[in-house]
Length: 131
Length: 131
DNA sequence: CCTTGACCTTCCAGTGACTGGAACCCTTAT
DNA sequence: ATAAGGGTTCCAGTCACTGGAAGGTCAAGG
Image 1 (cartoon, rainbow over the protein chains, first blue to last red):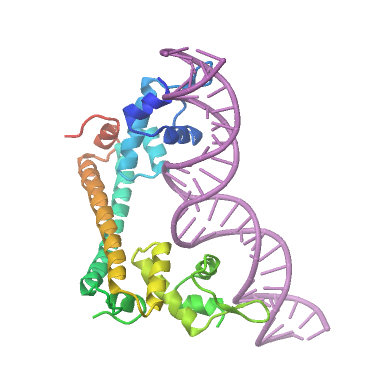
Image 2 (tube, rainbow over the protein chains, first blue to last red):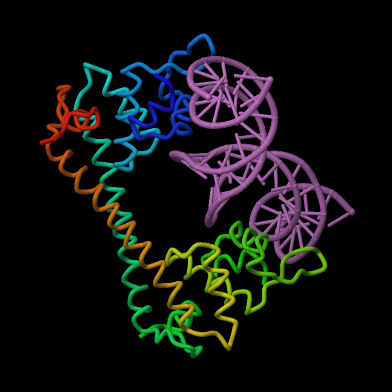
């Protein structure tokens, strides 16, 4: 299978697939004309990567997860630890965004949003405490 | 005032201050020895930038916001529009992260996390639907 | 006067995870 | 013969910094 079809079937763009080969996440075979030749295992790996990335795991996490996936003697504790750490990061990000959201939505509500220059958003950014 | 003190007082790192000058967000004066010389207005701008960045505005948004801040004839509607658009983005990000969080926390809960290899997290990433 | 240490300067490279584009090769159909 | 639609490599750009090297400046202490 060529890269285009793989991209279609896994949802991972060709560019990204080439990039993943570059950084050693996959190692597709080559045909005599130099084209990449993808087997089922490559498809499977790419789908795995796509899902892991969609869950927000970093590339390095994905590398580790793939290694664990292919290791029959793994301890599930390692996987769980990685996932839990990632979950904690997600929670932190959510909390940070919610903090931003709270401040910003308050400011947006306070701003008249008309043709006059008075603006509590700019006042706040300028250092005047918003009420 | 030199860059170090400005960094301390605004909370914006020296490196970042130099970067902001580089991209034209601030234009501090120079003393004869080549050191940057910061006035109160520069401090004020940097604090403004620090707060805007903390709210997650992009650098380009900050540029626009600063221009509006310094424009006495601005229409607050423009500021509000920018802030609202950013708020929408934040909401999208939060939603995306909460989606990840939901899936991941479910998987983490399902995983025994012991010395055995069985792991619903990897099963799911590998394409076997999680229950 | 010399040195030490804490500043400051510029410039270049790297981060993460791609993405866009140029320049070129291969295959198939018309 | 040629055109379309694949594929290939390689280089540059994204965003907002951050780290580090190599060197200039300044105030204090010996």
